[in-house]
Image (cartoon, rainbow, N blue to C red; front, side):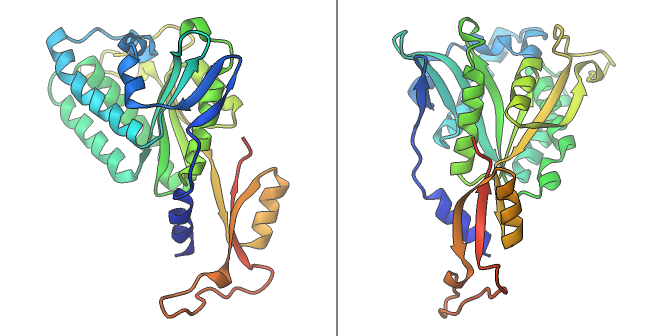
Length: 294
């Protein structure tokens, strides 16, 4: 179909690795070398992680390689970003981990998390089950009618650099990555109250929330105890691309401030015999892809 034809063409477009510098902070895509420089202590500041007991050292080390491999696969997708302090020898002061996801991958993660729960669950296993369960309940693929999305699962800004808009710049740059790669939807899991509020300011909507106090282990005990105001997990989402086959639908979206970033004439799409496939009546002459203005 024509929309799939468009996506293939669009994903071939080149995209800058550099999203600009402001006040000495450069946003760009993450490399594997960047990843090696990241202090793993940053994960301990996440509300769910900080409110649970530490795993045994030997178990934690056994899981680390899987954790690293998981993130390196994301980096190789070109969907992870870093914020670099150009005034401090290129120190990494912020980051985003994100990856493309399809329904089958989420379902497999959820099945794995449920299987793990049958044994003695560790803190990280509870977090995996909680996050996967919330995303299943959010029902993003059916809710928005998409077959794939860009999922952001970690955003971090160094404590000494917070309040400077770095997190917002990272999120906005990730939206641009999503657009350039042809993702029509971006979603994020926010365990931090401030992270969710920041994403709302960028136009993302909360489509599902769950109180940490409502998640309990098989003994009926609450697992997560983050400090206020971090009381809920929120699943946030935003449409990045809209495909309009109707002239009037495209015009309506443009009147709402969206921009047409690609269009293709129906007459230019032909089958293997060279025959035009689509012949809608005027004024419906093009398929248009519109995007939110960032």
